[in-house]
Image (cartoon, rainbow, N blue to C red; front, side, top):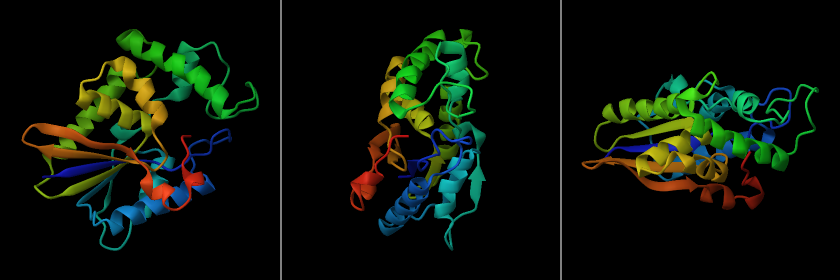
Length: 225
């Protein structure tokens, strides 16, 4: 049966002027996950990434001799965190530092983001954000559906994407209430692997958020943002 591996990008540059760049840790994570999947015999017939730089930099680790040409698909991009915060939070915190907002810590940012995400999801089509929750969650599901339809038996596709996109797709596949999105999203580890199998019953979640490849090297490489 065909298989899709959803790989979360490596650690980005949280708190920097440009968040959308891999950190030194993120580059190491990308190298480890690519090497681990190759060692386990995953030779993808298709390699897909969103358009964000942190996704593309992670996908570059898979660009070894014999690898398929990278397909860039914007529907695998992350939700716009700053836009969600701007419309659904009173906090001045933003992902990208511009010197004008509050001093940002990982814990403080998460505390502001979680209720903002919950409100964004609850507002659905009524949200004033550029991309509403239904649009975001539907984009990933549609992209996955098109990808799986093009896979033959025994083929594997690797998709380099983001935590929110993975959480939204997995929640939909499991039939989970939309309100569980934030809970799934917060647990995803950088460069983790979520495995989907496509069979006669449809697309099924086989494993979620596997990051044993990082722990085997150094547990300090396990990061969430």
